[in-house]
Length: 77
Image (tube, rainbow, N blue to C red):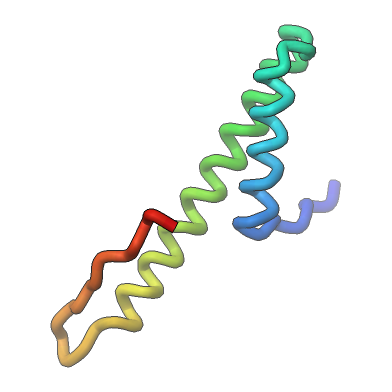
């Protein structure tokens, strides 16, 4: 079986949001809800890994002469 192409962070987040909407609608059976939850957990882990990788890259890019200069990011947007 061929391995599926890894989704981008944005694609994973959009799919995760769609899963949440379907689960909150109450229209899924128990089995479908469990399957959706399992898929959502995988997407959540993938998105968290992508965020962690991006954070590490930002830290590496902001290092100057062995010192780390991190600025607070505006999260209100």
